Length: 228
Image (cartoon, rainbow, N blue to C red; front, side, top):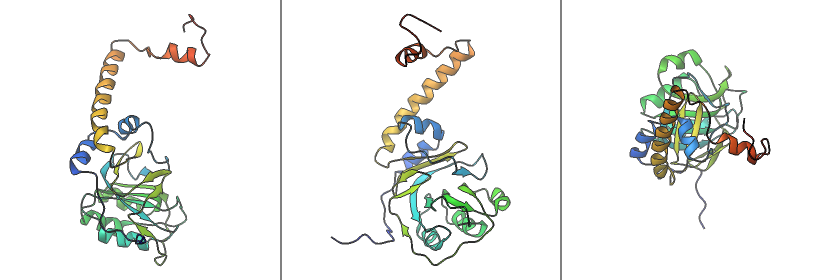
């Protein structure tokens, strides 16, 4: 059996149609219909709360504080891809800054998600390019430690495979398996409709959660026949 190379150039991506549809939903909606799974740790947050991103994952694994493989990934990624970088959550040195992220924007990438530190925050706010990170640090990285591109990674505690659907907004980042993503879109439509109907009920004064009494009885908080 031949060994998978460290750099995998060709991957199967979630379809552009699914990406376009997914971009219309909040990350929270997609996380709910995906079984409340696939969300990254809250440390991975947008540089600005208005930043949103949706696209297929182009995965990168690096050693903490080294960005050699990120430079290679920028050269290989396709327009519309989202770089998802497993930086091991390290915040002692920035893996990316204005120069690299400007190159990502110029190459037409959809955005960058880094489970690690970045820098140049004020310039990135002006760049108008979606960037999510675990924090900021002015220290620069090294550029000589090998890593891997387009292998399965863990970023922000979420499993990410190359080509998976990645959606991020002010609440954070959710990852949905490429094969499951198309089926999630209809579920998300229904979830949005259900929540809109519930908001209308609340606006009319119906604030009670219909499921709550049964859940409290099942938990042993309320006795049978007892109500709030």
